[in-house]
Image (cartoon, rainbow, N blue to C red; front, side, top):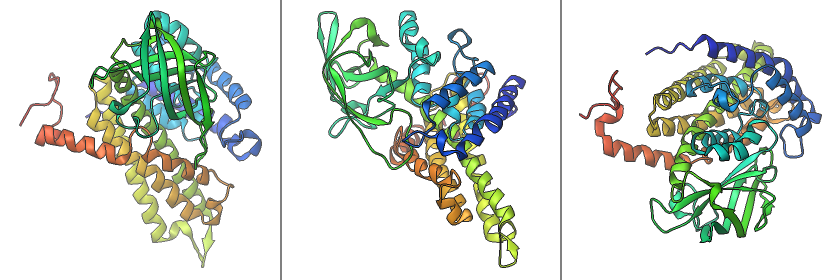
Amino acid sequence: MDFRISPDIEDFRVRIAKMVEEKILPLEADPASYDGHGNIRLGLLDELRAEARARGLWCLQLKKETGGAGLGKVGMAVCYEAMNRSIFGPAVFNSAAPDDGNMMVLEQLGTPAQRERWLKPIVEGKVRSAFAMTEPHPGGGSDPSMIRTRAEKKGKSYLITGRKWFITGAEEASHFILMARTSDDPRNGLTAFLYHRDQPGWRIVRRIGIMGPEEHGGHCELEFDGLEVPEENILGGVGRGLKVTQTRLGPARLTHCMRWLGLSKRAVEIAQDYAARREGFGQRLADRESIQLMLGGLAMKIEIGRLLVMKAAWELDRGGFARKEVSMAKIHVANLLHEAADIAIQINGARGYSTDTVLEWIYRYARQARLVDGADEVHRMVLNRILTEEGFGFWIWPVDGEEKPPSV
């Protein structure tokens, strides 16, 4: 297998790394850089976004005709990892969730009119977006078949009633993709609707407080009591909502992993730097075997995560669904991020637990990784189901010229 990347991808990686080093990392140490929810304040973010656009590093994940650079998933894996060396990085390059996934699904499934109205303003950085799927019990979470929010047809529109929660970015979003039930068909009962925040018939009930730092717009609970959406704002077709969720969430899970690898490497970087300088009992921490075992183990696990992510990215680029590859990457990298932050804090001692470094930020953020876009246990169930279906074919290598591996 050839793991070499193209010169174009390497050029993007180098230029991203340079901007992160020079323009973004220094801001993390200044309390004035943060908003009240632990993320980069919006005015400063707008300045950095203008810089990213001027450097040709904006929306690299989208097609050139959409306003991006046409990077495939393999290129995104390389670049997203470099972006998230800084906790502020993905938002600067317009590659942060939820806009990242929303832009890609709108690009792939939206009609020309929908792309003009709903996608273009996000690409231009004029608005932010949200994906409204998750519901309180007994509604849908990881299992979209449990979604209870309903859309009733009325003439050429649909009236939507129901409730959603933990909707990332909702408080700052203008454009929403909303999943609602249009029938009780288990496979074709869901439909994706596009709506604007200024439309009547819905409200933000509350911004839900969470353990860690928050994305812009937080994680909100929403109520719908008659939101009217015209037929032309249906994304992907009536009853095709499950396809929309699969199209969006599969790659989105993987882009999370790409970014989390960058944060994991940053945690190791901070730990290495401190261990090289800190002495105790006549010896540098870096010279202690226990510290070397910690850092060496993390280096190996990060590389395993990179290989899992790259294999999944390669499979998506060649037209596959990469269900098992994405699930394996999601489980491994989510747990890796938590472990990397935890070990780095341990090596830094009280300094790591303080706000003198971004380690405590990463640690609080990391705990959500094992929950978002499917809990660890859900992905293990997915892997077991695929293993049961494929048997030893689960581990078969793809063969040139064959669309899928041979059965055994």
